[in-house]
Each structure stands twice: as C-alpha cells, then as structure tokens.
Image (cartoon, rainbow, N blue to C red; front, top):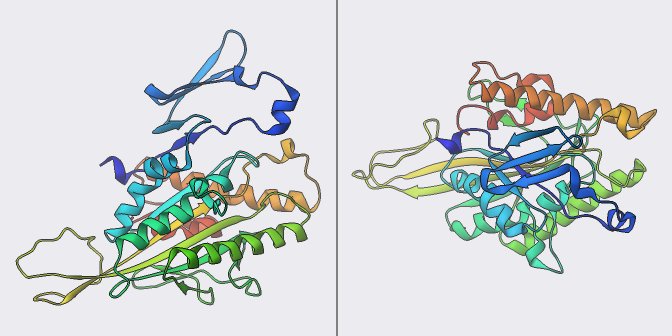
Length: 316
C-alpha cells in the first residue's frame, strides 16, 4: 500500500527578515502546483524543471497540517506495533528544526512533529498497561552522544544477533508520563545540542538529532478475535493472555545538507561536512534501494543508517 513506501513531502518556508530586507524577488525561481503535488523550478526565462512529490506545502502551511498529513499516519502504524520513521532533510536554515523540534512553549500552535507525535501517543495509550519511553541522541563526527546525559559520548550501536534489532547500550531511556515531562526532556536535549554547537562555534546544528520513542502495549485478546499484527511481534496466545506489541518511532532532524564548496568551510568545518555528507549519502543509497525493492539495503555504511536499520526492513 501507499503507506508502506518511502513518502516525500516538500515544505517551503516563508521569507526571513534578511530576505525581506533585501527586497529581492525570491519567488521567481520556484512555482508550487499543490493540486498536482508538483514543484516547478525555473532555471531561466525559458527552461524549467518539474518535480513530483507525495505532498507539497506552501509557506503558509501550519505545523498542525504538516503533522496531520506527514507524521500522523506513521504514528498510527507505530501504535499498531510497526516501526516508523519521520526525517527532516534540507540545507541549513530551511526550517528542519522548526518543523520537527519546535517546542511551542509560548504558542502551542507552533509545536513541531516531536511534541505532537508524543501528545498523540500519550492520548492513545493507557499508561496502566502500556509504557512510552524516549532516548534523545545526536550523531556528530560519527560519534553517538546522549542529549539527555551529555557526559555519555561514543555510545555503541549493537545489533541483536537473533532478531537483528538495533540497540544503544548506555543511552538513557526515560519513561514518560505526561506531555509536560515530554517538553522538559526535549528542552534538556535542545539545550545540550545547542551547548555542543556553541562549543563548535556554529549557530546551526552540524549534528543529526535522533529522538527514539519506545512503545510497549499490552492488548487483551479473546480467542475468537482475529487481530492483524506484525509478523515478528512477541506475543503469547491462546486464551485470554495479553499480547505485547513493541514498536519504535524515530524522529530525525538531519544536519544541513549543503555542499562543502557552497558553504565555504575550512579546517574543522570540512571535517564536519565530510561526516555529514557521508551519512546523508549513505541514507540516500538506502532510500534508493528501498524505492527499487532491492533485496540488500546497505545500512552498514554509516552510523546514521545503522541506527535507522529497524526502520529499513521487516517490521517498518
């Protein structure tokens, strides 16, 4: 079905203050055709190229609408026991962190996908029988760091030899009870990510931020009911015994995707860009392999794709 493939949505941000101050006509190169879900890129007065997406959002699109169209279907399948992933990709300054990580403390309508997904999950589960826990990590220069416990760096990525499931031994996994707790944890993560960026003297994030939401749900099932569940779910039947659904939702705010020659980086910045480009090109290869239904998904090429491995196969 349509939900089982990689879906790509495009969002155009409004002009920022610098762009408005310059007064240049920035609109001339991009034309949206939302009804056909196409974007037209004008190269000069004569030539233009058209690109097709699954969804297209103009600069007036609300955070709520982005969540409902892009992330909600993924969250719903995660609640049914499947693994799912939502990623934001694009150059520095295009609005990835706003779309994904905005906490909306002053204005709840500005909340991004992370807060909205957790709000949706908490409202759909019964915390007497179910549990929701989160880990919040960043990947910087191919080293995994814990944003909830910043002293933990170089966290290993381990695959279970039997199930192939990916885990990060040593990373904090915090059980959450309510939305206020969620916002506190995301705030801690954001502060730690920002502190790391300041140390690196960059305003923008040169790291990938990865929020992992672990769900465990107990469903009581009578013998006569037939339930559609993922094939590799741990379950105990028959009779009136609980069925345990375990699933993971990954929400990823990728580092900026600009090319080295464009960003004018040198020295340390080039090191950063090399690692960012390595993980983004590995991610691209995996997504291409999925799009072509290839039997081999090359997840071992970078730490980013190794962390996303559960989202690339089997139960996702």
